Length: 115
Image 1: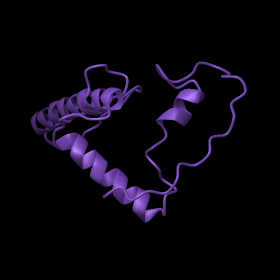
Image 2 (image 1 turned 120 degrees about the vertical axis):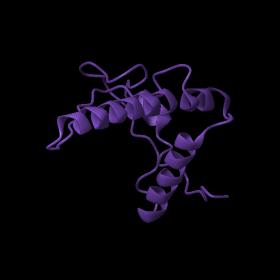
Image 3 (image 1 turned 135 degrees about the vertical axis):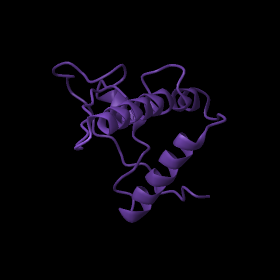
């Protein structure tokens, strides 16, 4: 999802550890295929482009957790940040160096994300 990850498994059984590490790596790769905005074919990218999409369980769970975080934080943790991220130069990946002057973004109006 535009970053690197390091997976570590702690166990006394190397065979169990190998299986767990492989499973974790596959799960992370599957999650990236769905949630990365840097992969053109991901469900999230398709949704961002069209405003609608048929999505699977991973993206639905991510939406639910995002809504919970938004509600829990009284809107402080707001997932609607794509425009602000892109204004900061975070379109294709993490900006390299100074992105120059950027106007502060106004906070999106509060919404009922469940409605």
